[in-house]
Length: 166
Image 1 (cartoon, rainbow, N blue to C red):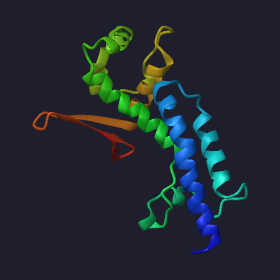
Image 2 (image 1 turned 90 degrees about the vertical axis):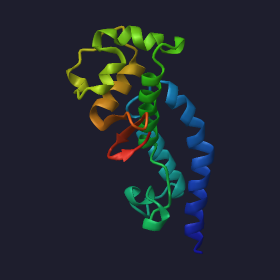
Image 3 (image 1 turned 180 degrees about the vertical axis):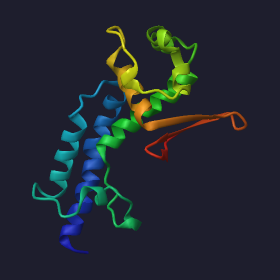
Image 4 (image 1 turned 90 degrees about the horizontal axis):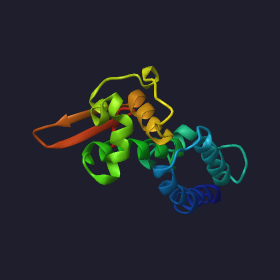
């Protein structure tokens, strides 16, 4: 194994275990600034390549090893998948106390049934009392996801960018 390959694999391992894992919980429950994930990706990729120019395209490096990638994490996709996971929680949590804030602020938009609709989130006029966290979830879902309830299986599947995440 080449020394540079070892450094790349080692750098990816360090980034995934010490950097990304520390950010996952916070980004799953908090509003994330638009450029935050891009900055995290920039710093992580710079670290992997010892703060030099990238040796492999980022699109390739995040791919699986069997397709020539190095299984690196794209933090933009991590943030989006964490927000997408909230759709299932909110749909299944109807009636629970922790879901009452969501129900009250989204009642004028149809509550959780809005996820059953095909909508453009930019056409919805969110009011000032809507938490930014929910607005992020709506915008992500409206642009990138399809939610399908399968009554025969009593499960819900969700696709994000064409890939099933739930």
